[in-house]
Amino acid sequence: MKSYSSNEMRRYNHLLREMDAVYHEMSRRLGLSDSAMIVLYTICEHGDGCPLREICRLCGLPKQTVNSALRRLEADGVVCLEEADARHKNVLLTEEGKRLAERTAVRILETENAIFAAWPREDVEKYLELTGRFLHDLKERSQ
Image (cartoon, rainbow, N blue to C red; front, side, top):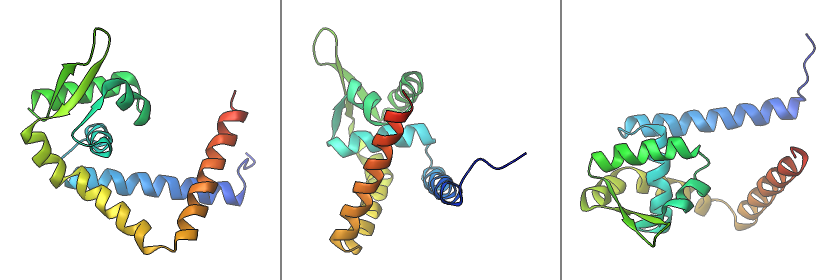
């Protein structure tokens, strides 16, 4: 069968898979499932808490996966859900959740921030611009 992928796409896909593998390994070493880490990471990006609808929107996981991860985190005493209003909930870190976040998701966020801080500002901006452009074009062409 003929290859339908350009050399650039093969390289790009390889880099994405390698990056996913690194994040998976970090989550595993820190004792969390990938989905639990992504949910915890997303909450940490917002501070100690985050609207549930924002977690679903930002983490790129199916809603069912987010809900399963939240149920596990809630059962472990890491998060609690509180009513924001009649139709919305906020997800808050418990004291245990804050301690877990410091040992896990915050360490990953600090690592990522340190990498970007070590790059020249123009490289960071170009990387983000091109990644955003690729995502935009992919969304446009997939409709």
